[in-house]
Length: 93
Image (cartoon, rainbow, N blue to C red; front, side, top):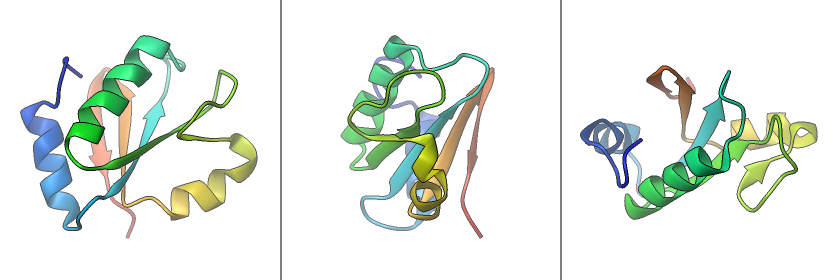
């Protein structure tokens, strides 16, 4: 993720096919670094999304899905961004 939304981020949001999609960020091996979360929230908020993330490693903060509510949070999401090296986007079926 750059300072703002990338072309790939914009494409992902368009492919979601809904207005104001709820996008869940899943940070894998990187943990939950605050800088990465801040860039994610900034970029996807600029694209009109309702961003959230799984709080694996840190105390939950605004927008996070606590692990004890993982099923509810994931089922409410329009799409997912996984960050482990190359970003991967997916949508629930």
